[in-house]
Image (cartoon, rainbow, N blue to C red; front, side):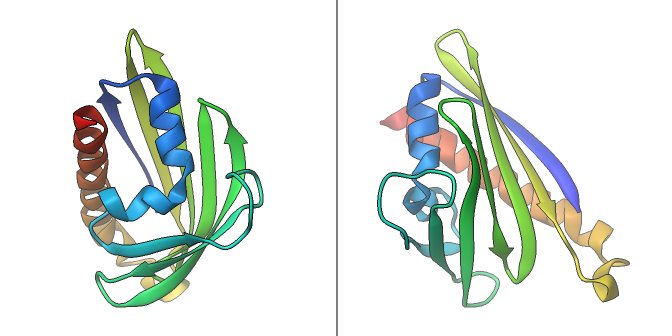
Length: 142
């Protein structure tokens, strides 16, 4: 299951990237998360690992790791999301004083769920779009 959402945020690219790269900010704009905690020391970089607590659709703990980080341009994270292996890529491009953020999500559905994946895909894409809208609102208000 792969999809992409794009949003324009009226904030400078460096500001948006700095906020995204600190994955501990995730629960502030993702309603399904209660906490994301960094497990490794130091500033976010390739190899930095996180543990997050999900509350929706069920209570679960998930692991994330930054696998690509190009300052102010690209952040890729891999891990589990609701027990599904996932790759999340955030790519940023300047648009004058604003930033265009493209989020590409690649979820690996287990084979028994492959037939249901297209049905779930629309709902997941919509939830991710709502989270990005919350991120936009949060960053534009600060």
